[in-house]
Image (cartoon, rainbow, N blue to C red; front, side, top):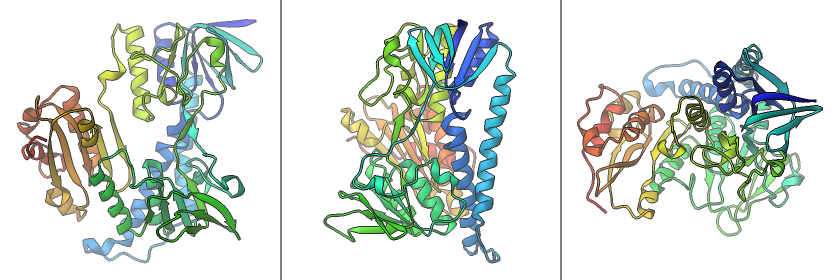
Length: 458
């Protein structure tokens, strides 16, 4: 027997539960299917547990360096069991709270198990067969483990499995010098581990402008993280109880030996076992579900939200996907993915907040640009905090005065960047930003100043 619903949501990550609530409130009969942990990556292996660990690591760093602020702190130690327990509780509370809320939501049926399409409007979950006129896919992704030489012969960690550690690694080797890898690198260094970052590219976080990459490297190296870039010979081999990580065939020590290895080499989307062919749903070569500007797939009546659609691998983009779909279906909103300002952060300390295009991207797009930069050493809040690493940078179209992008690397950069995100979303020009009054003493108060210090067009 087929169970009929108005809407089926596959996956209870960031977008799914909120969409279930909106649709159910509109009088629709909704089924939401989750095969594993409610809350998706953010709640279970992403934002919530990792940022809880980042907070603990910062506390250790501040205590260890308290003398910088004229404070004499007692001897400091890190209890990794307690640190892990705190992160586990934050994630568990969010997960169980979300599941309980969904199960009590009127008009919503919660089903646990793996969903697979059998046709465009039907899915199977175990022995159950469900149908709906509208189906929404919200299945996310997981850590990728590339087939590197020797990787199957040694124990390796991912961003998920490393969260199960309750003891401090003696030497953590992080393979991958991008956003996830760098957060864990600094975190574990602050907990007291030796840490080496191994990156195949010429610089860390290669999608950023070179000066951002260099400043991030300097921040990490100042705390004792060893960085090895241009690692063209990444390979693995057991060495006693440790792991030997091949790094270079040319310069520097050819091998780094660590007690633990974290692979931070991208994501694999959870789209391969959904039976998408049976529904006529197209995917791109990377496994992302192809969607249009309103997140509709190639199959009529089917949408894809969140990481699985390849339009953003962040919690905030997934939630915005929900808002776009709900607004268009229920409110006549006419909202589109391309209306949003690209924005994200790197949550090292100090953090990097990013909005819009980098300078490199703008120039590659043929734009003539004007650049404004102010070092954090000239920002009062940073000086008062004694944390002056980083800078503010804005990218402006020299011909139209439109703001193309910005980076704030420094104290509270992940918060201050929202002033620029909001202004860009509202179409504010550089001239408008220059005229705005901000509160002193804050990091954001220097945003009008940096727009007033734009260089010559180029």
